[in-house]
Image (cartoon, rainbow, N blue to C red; front, side):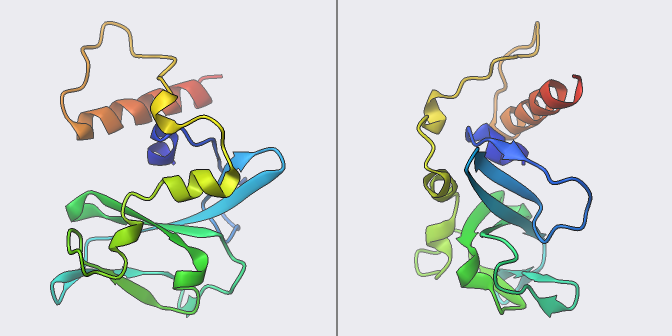
Length: 157
């Protein structure tokens, strides 16, 4: 959710834990659901990511996109549901130009296009920076600060 918010996407989380998706992105009248998965498991040169719920594949219509995070590569893959429905897992080869999923790497624009947002991510500016804080020096610090600001803005109310 924090990474999507960093990209200027309006994020909402469903109440409870019974939804077949983890959060939605969108605006009134147009929302898309996102299921989040992650992996550390490396096998045969790639990272195997489970894309099922429990012990069976997700049913069609369970969500619109899956956001898969390959932790060691610090890489997000934003994949339409049709690509993963019916599968138990998919394999990612970060940085390999011949990998069939590489075109989905950091493809946050597909979520933006899906909800037809008008404001590009590069025009979104943090509205509540941490006071007396020097700017983050690397991407990981930037994400941590963005996550902190997101939580502070939305849960301090």
